[in-house]
Image (cartoon, rainbow, N blue to C red; front, side, top):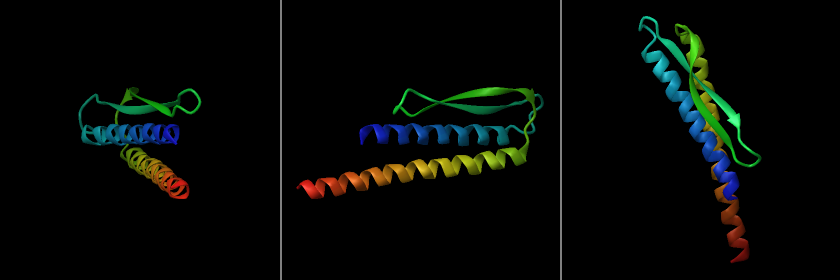
Length: 100
């Protein structure tokens, strides 16, 4: 179960990075020459989770509609990974009850 928790935790951190980058973009939308940030996510070796890296886009400007979608997607990803952690906790609790 610890690898499952580790994978879900890395997913939570990636979702948080996406939300933070998007919020940063919205806050700086009116800054002249500002280039938006994006989070690149990449799967790490089997059963190791995801690695997130913040990068700048090549072109200046922020599309607020795109940022709204990004924030919703990051929130859904966060909720999904939190659900995995809760399910792992509940399953482990059930297994401990059975063997106790």
